[in-house]
Length: 340
Image (cartoon, rainbow, N blue to C red; front, side, top):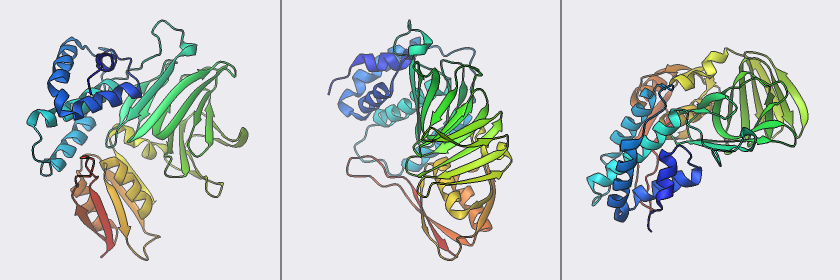
C-alpha cells in the first residue's frame, strides 16, 4: 500500500474527515511505510500552528495516553521497531491534539455554513472538545462519533450522535438544534446546555439538562419536556421513559476529567468505569444486583479505582492483561468482578 499524501495534508490542514483519519492510522500501522510517513508528518508538524485562541486542558489526554502506554509496554510484540511504537503514539497525539483544540472542517472552505457537514470522533479512553460551524461548543466522550449538518428543507441544525456528548448550543430562535440518537429518541433545543449518552450497543438514551429547556421526541411525536436538573432515561427495548431530578453537574463532570457516581448500580458503574479507563468488565457476581455505588474519581489510575470499588461493594477484582489478537491488534484489559 502506498500513502496518499492528501490524507495527511487534510489532517494537518484541519479539514480532515473520518476517512482521512482512518487512512492516516493505517499508514502508521504499516512498517513498510514508516519512513515515508515520517518525512511527510515531520514536514507538516514543523509548519503546524494551533489556534492561539483555543487553550484546551490536555492533561486528561496525556494521562490516558500515558496509562495506555504503560499497560502495553510489557506485551509489545517482538520485532516491532521502536520507531513503529513511537509512530503509533504520535498518531494518537496528532489526532487527539487537533480535535481537542476545537478544530472543525468543511466540505469546501468557501461554501456557506448552510451546506457544511462536520464529523468528529473520539477514541476509546479519550474525550475531546469540539466546535460546530454554528458556534455550538461541547465535549465528545469516550469512543463516540458526532456528525453535524444543516437541513435546509426544515431549517434545522441536525446532529447524529453515537456515544457521549455535552452540548452548549448557540441560540437560534428560528433554527432548532436536533440531536438524533441510536435509540431513536431525538432531543430538540433552541439554545441550552445538556448532556446525552446514547451508545448503539446500549439500546438506551440518557439525557441530563443543565440549563435551558429540552423537548424529547419519538417518531416526530413529543414525549416530554425537560427543565434544568432533569434526568431522563429512555429504554428502546420496552419503549419506557424514566424521569428524575438530579444534580446535573455530577453527570457532566466527565468533560472536566472527573467521574462522579451517586447511588449508581454496580452494572452501570462497570459500564462507566469501562469507558472512563478504556477497559472491559466481566461480571461474575451473584445476589448483589441492588448494590449501589458512590464514588468520585479524578486523578486515580485504574488500580486505585478498583481498590476503592472493592472497599465500597462486596466484590473482588481480577485483572487480565491485554492480549495480541489474530490481526495484531490488542484486546482491552479485562476486569473480572466476583463476590468476595
